[in-house]
Image (tube, rainbow, N blue to C red; front, side):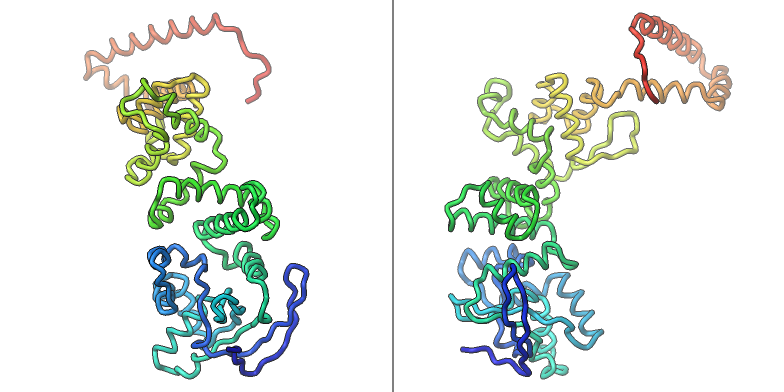
Amino acid sequence: MKLKIRGSQARPKTIQGKQYTVINGYAKIADLHFWEDNPRIYSLLEDERDTGTISRAEIFEKLSLTKDLQKLRKDIESDGQINEAVWVALDINTQNYVVYEGNTRLAVAMALHRKGKDSKKWSEIEVNVLPDGTDERVMKNFIGQTQLKGKNKWAAFEEVNYLFRETMDIMKNKNASKTEATKMVANFFNLPQLRVSRAVKTVDFMQQYKMSSLVQKKYYAYWQRIVAGNKEINMLRKVFNSYSFLKGKIENAAPNAFDHMMIKQVKEEKQIEAAAADGSSAKLVSYTDNLRLIGRAFETHNDIELVLDLMEEKIDLAEAVRRALEGGVGDAEYKRVKEFADWLMHKNTIKKIRKSIRTYENLGHDLKSISIHARHLSNATMSFPKKKNIKK
């Protein structure tokens, strides 16, 4: 059934270099349908998608719970109107007129219409309708240009899943390799191929370990940093995910053991951030930065035991970082000696120590021991060749 539009006017619109005649006007909200693949709510419809029970009412309820809708509703109620038209096209499979861009605006109009006050006013919404028969890919391109780059972009989690689904569709429908498909998606949306490739790698990782939508969304930033483009962590994953490498080295060796360790740590949230072990006890570093530090220790010193002890929970992440630093990564010893020397030579410290000698008998002995050991270390450094042309 043709969509009825009040006050219709034809206007030209260019998408992907092709001009379309778009009909602008007002349509009844009852005649419009939500886009089921809308990334803003795609993950919220996981159960309904599995059971085939997605409905207009269900999508409305899901959208009503989002912060985007609550914020937009306040703005619209303040303005007294919806200031921007929604974009509509006919779905040739369902013969429904689908709102591809502006689902949240449609949901706000439905909510205000149900509220009862000025219900007639909210029974219609301004639309831009593409000609019947327009390929859905045209709408997807238009939406991608708006949401992937526009001022109201999708959240990162929603974006990567959308790019992943687009890549999978091309692989299936065009029999393309993953590399070819990511390139085609990047070209289609005019995005860097690396951005699409990272999105696909991240979603692949989340799906490989059968994470629920809640776990995917809550910890997405960690999965993305772990998987996409982190050289040190991916080196650890390559070595310590190998069952043949782990067999005989740890109890209960299993494939992908390092990944399972990371996932457990992130979900338990106990070691996401750990105190740095370089003398600055107040400093916190991110979980992935700590893993990168351990990766550099393994690469530099081939410290297999350090990683294995962490995987078998013989040590926690903070201890693993401390051991990595003491192995030379991060110049921990230099920093500790420097900080100790600065503290010891400070005039206030000297004054306080002099007073304390009268109270603590062993303090003089401790100072003498420090002096002797410091002299030995100083003499030892005299035998090292001096570095030239060091710029400070």
